[in-house]
Length: 498
Image (cartoon, rainbow, N blue to C red):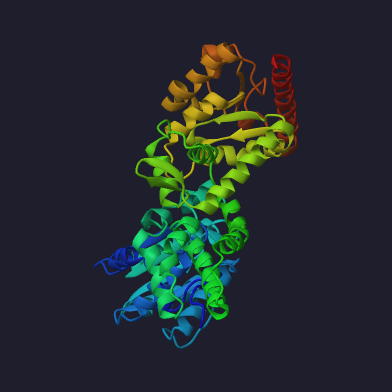
């Protein structure tokens, strides 16, 4: 008997692919529109994005009105490498006769020639490898955007998070390229898809697992990759038990699956926000999640982290429950050995993101994390979370407010009426330390609370008065020193209050 379950690579054969019919129909419908649409497939690692892309590739190849090209971008590191890989893929697919040069102009000519007869579907798997790579300038993304804008071209991309969140710079994240996509989040299986995976593939391969379907669901939940691992191991165990007339050892299957999946659960956990981890911890304890926004809880359910059992939210599988119990034990142990970190809330206007990146202050301060000084800004908010809820929760936990002061900051309704208001309350109630930094020239000294607070730099602004890199670095070292001193005062106050 041949084990039908794949537990390492994307599923490329039709007979082994299960589920995702709703997603396939939706995406093919967008590609087939009178004006072809572009799609961004977003989902956690190992949720099945590449397998879905392969299924799309197989189905679209059967159509006579489409030229379809697939390219995995994990190993593509340069523009010339990208253009060469796509042109090679067009040649392998039989869509072009001569490969020619590897350049934007060459690819544009090929696209123009192809789309004179058919529409083109360009499938780019693991596109985050491009978005995170500084070798791909802003003009590269403008070029890609020009393809569907000029010809009947659909781009289908995949990435583990929203593409804008993975770009190497704010400038790239602001590119109009990212506006052309219909985002489709790929979540866990529906229960009927999970059961189809368990039962149909094993039945066809001569070693039915239907009698163990409840045990498989309990172990793996509806996470496709987890199901593949558990079913693979169970298929092997059942095949061996059938040959030796022994009993099936489900505990051995679960133990082996847990060892196999532990790195993946650990990776998933590390990519959750602090708020999401808190939700999971509460669910593990059987506590109510009413205090958390529905968006956060729904996102965790869709991603296969939690399950809704008639209004009672709990970890999605026995293995993940075991993992969370292990993590909770480690966290308890760590709390007894590790000093509580100093939390620094970075308050700024989003209109200043480019200025902040150019000046480089936050990058200069980031190594202080190793000193137990942790900086938080709203870019840490995960997909599906209510940004207002997360920000307000972080405001209550902060020790130091790092305020990046500019005209935009002073004019921001949210910064002034929510964040600054909470900071001023906390300064009176709990001794929160305000740490204003004047990034650019503005009338900060006309604001009463700012005028009464020590600011950095003490004269002028960073943008106007510290243009020279050496002079600016000297200022940043001084800011670091002041932050360390503030953190030490907080630690001393904590130790004396115990």
